Image (cartoon, rainbow, N blue to C red; front, side, top):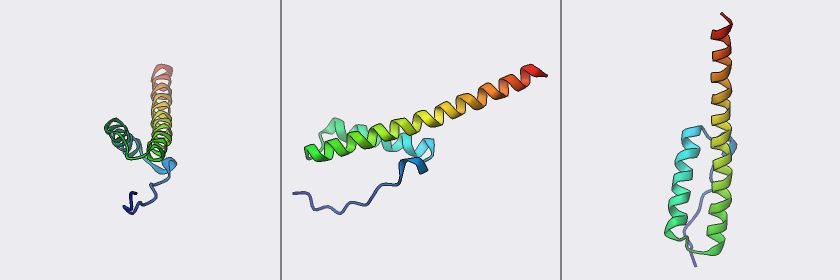
Length: 76
């Protein structure tokens, strides 16, 4: 049984793109290495899904900002 103390990870919605991306890389790496238990694997998978959605939110926001800037330049 794993008795290592675990801290609660930060809420995904509070993470910057870089923080979410870096944590997602760690999650994927741990999953690829084979997590210690099925429960841990499922928890990692769920966290990874949430992190991937957060990264996508940031990227979509960046895309919208770029498109708005392009429209503004084209309107001049």
